[in-house]
Image (cartoon, rainbow, N blue to C red; front, side, top):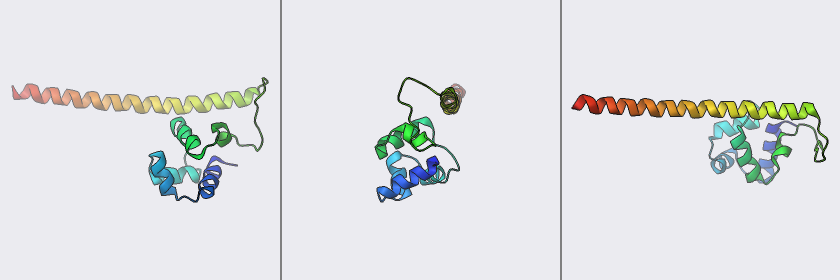
Length: 120
């Protein structure tokens, strides 16, 4: 079962609209709708919010095979590698967003300082 299908089922169980859930998660309804339709995937921070909101384990949201929970000490390396790649992908995107935000802030600060210097 896809993540989008799971999100839709969880929302229907709570009898909520996409807009209501989006407000609770502090995201746009469009973004949440895209998650439910599997057009995009939420970042790790939003996955954590979703799991808390619905009271479900994050691993249950991400697990694509029914009943595929590996809580013992043996690991399937392919699943671990896939999980690591997924986390790295989302972390990389988040870091890029953070750096872009910092660069915008610096550009704004530089513009402000230049305008103050020009007034002198």
